Each structure stands twice: as structure tokens, then as C-alpha cells.
Image (cartoon, rainbow, N blue to C red; front, side):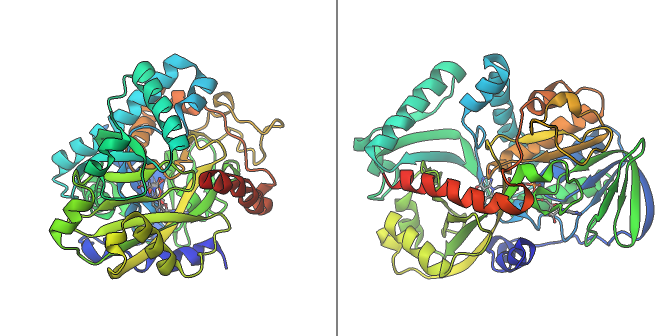
Length: 449
Ligand SMILES: Cc1cc2nc3c(=O)[nH]c(=O)nc-3n(C[C@H](O)[C@H](O)[C@H](O)COP(=O)(O)OP(=O)(O)OC[C@H]3O[C@@H](n4cnc5c(N)ncnc54)[C@H](O)[C@@H]3O)c2cc1C
């Protein structure tokens, strides 16, 4: 079964879909349209870019294959976090210390952007500040502590170290050794947030078309996007389709790979019990490579994510195995009912750094001979945003802003990211999944140590 049909199944039973109202529906594209900018993808990246471009006076058409926020943006863990999925050392290694600091600052700006947009557009999405990054044993605690000290020293990262003695005041779980609390990061209801952005974009004049999969991109002086029943010709195009592009941009798609991740949501808990589990109401991640991520919801449920599928098939007995994970963390929840379970695919890049850029001008379909792409070969009017690697809830907002800056004449900040080099997954389109499964087996073993 293709991951697209697996993804359809995974989308069905989400807590978010059950607790957000889709007030707006958009027609599908019929006929030919013109715009300054055409965007593929109605997730947070595409919507953010659309808003920023409309703010800058550009006419924008956004094409969404299904419904806005149908993809990862409407069903993720809701954790809006500082930083990137990769460690800052990867950015330092590639760009140097100064630009790496700029990147870190931009990830903080991404958090502020969420607050600003909620205020500006009146979006109520259950924002709750606070994030705990927790180590499950002494060895991992040592790694986390060294990381925290380095981030404080080099980046002025403000977070509080939680010693083993203090741990139970932060989380009523036997699983964790020590950790850090970051008051600036937080969590929200991602579907309410995304739908709020879609409403804002429409109010700003962005033309949104749903049920309009783009099947072909024609590059050139005025690129053109084709759907089954129409087309959009624009001065510039943004591809923000996550793992779903399916051949629209074969030059860059092999550099990301869909990895499944899964979430369950409990029945509403006694509010006092819920408050006792994580008194600060923070979002939580453990520091394992295959991590558990969880948080209380505004209506006192435990929303618990974890497991991964590198083969894109859904793990068997998903609900039972997720319940077991949740009960290992919180034995108090061993008997609670699971009301929702769902999942989705994240777009991981090989080095877990975000992959932003422009397609090669000549429309070349093949990779450079060394497999590495650099900003120099990316000079066309077709931009792309991908490779958020499971860390895109906040970063997509900033990415949309950077693309809008670049498209309207100031590419300085976009190009900091675009200078990051990325390799395609080894083995090409068909072999990249098995290669990754093998690679990940190594990290699973390390997680167990
Ligand atoms: C289960 C899960 C949990 C996650 N948890 C977190 C978390 O807690 N914190 C965090 O920071 N990140 C998390 N993420 C990652 C985060 O959700 C993503 O990084 C982010 O939402 C990506 O946004 P996007 O706009 O790039 O992609 P999407 O939201 O997937 O949007 C892409 C859209 O493009 C459309 N599209 C694709 N191709 C075409 C086409 N050819 N024509 C028209 N439309 C097209 C798709 O239908 C889709 O709606 C999680 C992801 C998942 C799946």
C-alpha cells in the first residue's frame, strides 16, 4: 500500500479533527488563473508564506490537494519548540558560528511569530507555555547537561536545569532522571491554529483552492502549475507540499523521506489528576532518538505521541502499544480509555536540518554529480520548503516569512538556510526506505542503553 493511502487511514481518528470546526471550505480550481505567487500546499508553511506575501502586496493563489491543514500541520504533537531537529553543531559545522547563532535566533523568532499571529488574527488555539526535555537515564542526562551548558554559553539559551532530586516536582513519573525546562517553548492545538491562519489568509485576499492536487510544474520565466481542471501561472512559485508532492519536483524530493509517527489521546481525566502529572502543564519530550512526546490538552486529556515507522507501514496493535508506552511513563493512566489514535508522516532530511531553497534554473531533473546541492545552483523563481524533520510546527511559520522576504527582494535570511547542504537518501527513491530502516536500528539499540 502506498504511504498516501496509509496516510488517509491515519488521518481519520484525530482528537484535533474532533475538537476544531472547519468553518471555511474552499472550492477546487477550475480554469486558468494568474497570480504574482502560486503556492503548492495548504499546511503551515504554505499558509504562512501566503499571509506574508499578501501583507507585502502580492496576489497569491494557494493550491491544496485535499483540505487546508489536512497534512502534518493539522495533526501533529502540538509542541512549538525552539531550535531545529538537528543539533546546532550541524549548523555550526556547515555555516560557521555566526550564522549558526542567526539560525538559533530565528527559531526563537518563530515562537514569537505564533504569539503575534494569534493576537493579530484572534486565533484561539489553547496556547500553553512550557517545555520539558527529559533524560531517561544517567548517561543521557550527562549528554543533556553538556548540551544545556553549551547552549547557555554559546547561544544564551535560557532554560532551567532540573536535578534528579527536583524531578518529581516537574513530572509525576518514575521514568525520568533529570532534564531541562524551557519556558519560552510551549504547545497548542495545531488544527485550530492552522485553520485560523487559513481564515486570515483568505481575509487578506489569498485565493485558496482545496481538492486541487498539482500534478505538474512547468518551469520558465513564468512558471505554471497544473491541476486536473485548471492551471495557475505566476511570477514565482513556492512548493510547500511536505512528503506529498509525489513527483512535482523530482530534483529535491529524494532529499526527504516520509517517516510515520503516531499519537493517542486519552479520555478527559480528572483535572486534579491531570494537573498532578505535569504540574507546569508543559509539553514533554524524552531525549531518545526514537522519542516519546506528550502533553496535557486544554480539556485535561493526555495526548501521547511516539513510535516511528521507517517503512511507512502502520505498526501493528498501535493503540495497545501506545497505551503501554503511556502507562510506562504514567502508571496512573494504565486503565484510562483511549478516545483517539492517529498519525502522520514527517519529512526528515538525512542530516535533520531544514532544506529550503530554489530549484535549479534550468529545471534539471538530476542531482549534481557529488550529490550535494548548494545555494549557487538554486537561482530560479521556484522556491521550496521541506525537511522540517518533525520539528516544523514553529519553524514553518518563520520559513514562510523568509520565503516572502526572498521573493520580494531580500533573500539574506532565506539564504542563510539555503546555504545548508543536503544529500539525497542513499539508494534513490526505491531503496531509501530499507537503507533508513537499517540505519535506525542502530539508534534504537543506543536508545536502550
Ligand atoms: C504525527 C506528527 C506529529 C508531529 N509533532 C510535531 C510537534 O510536536 N512539534 C513540531 O514542531 N512538529 C511536529 N510535527 C511536524 C510538523 O507537523 C511539520 O513539520 C509541519 O506541520 C510541516 O508543515 P508543512 O506545511 O510543511 O506540511 P503539511 O502540513 O503536511 O502541508 C503540506 C500540504 O501540502 C499539500 N500538498 C502536497 N502535495 C501537493 C500537491 N501536489 N498539490 C497540492 N497540494 C499538495 C498536502 O495535502 C498538505 O496539506 C509532527 C508531524 C506529525 C505527522
